[in-house]
Length: 280
Image (cartoon, rainbow, N blue to C red; front, side, top):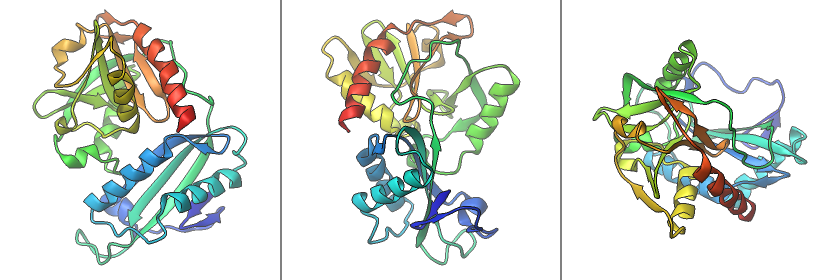
């Protein structure tokens, strides 16, 4: 059961071949967790969605308040019998039908989906997790790359490459050969007491978990958090590498080429992340 423009639908046709998200990727989305009817980091996801809609010149409806959309998300979760457990939510916004590249309207529609998730809180997956650089195509270092749009062809073909070659994930680079992010999240590099993450101007996603981890790490007097360029050479010098997003939390990388990594710092940060999630 999905929520289309405020109405719960089950099996009805509500999209067609003229959908601009399908035709042009003219669409944005937010993915986040819900636990027992509580939306994790909802305010941050809402504000990012509103800012992204403004950048793409989408018309924001008058009823797109944080409270009203939260109610619509909760209706969707309830309609899928997921109020008493963990759920994964996807909120998609797309410009309405009409036009070619130039739309005939900037009005939007939205879809909310909710599916059961396997863990109520962020946990650390300590199983083998191997990555490789994906260099067939590059991330553009601009503001559009910071947005969570439906233009994810790079991430799709990168995921196919990873699957065909037995990797769990790939790291993406921009056209300046700087490491930007993983296929499904932001990247953090731990070396001694320094933790580095690529800056937004290099083209990484403006991730909500990235933002929250930066907040946590900057409060730790024993950690030097920097937003700086990450070169491929640095990866094999690091003590730890993490992939982060709003659904998995922190995923430690265990192997890149001949280098194996620890996860001690990731473990220490995870408790603080779950505490912050409970307060959100």
